Length: 130
Image (cartoon, rainbow, N blue to C red; front, side, top):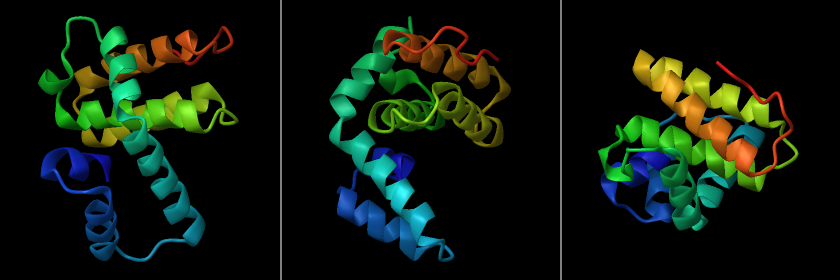
């Protein structure tokens, strides 16, 4: 949904409608979690982008590949909105998405940015390292 929102410049309600209308039905819990992440990322977009920009040295948000930018956004949204989820789990999930949808060079970049943000947020030492 974040990628669609980023590329299509649609309202959040339009994105939600278009996203779910073109997919097979999923469990209510899965859909609810996805929408919660989308809402958290959308509502906190300026804060999230600033956090990413601070950690993504020499990379402006608009110059990052769109897939990477939105993987980072959803990862940071989960770190902020779901503090009960262990930070290494959040980072690992983001890396799994990157392995599937992004290039191999992006994995280290995404890992470094999310790990740095997790540390900024006070993550315990030993946060996930690729």
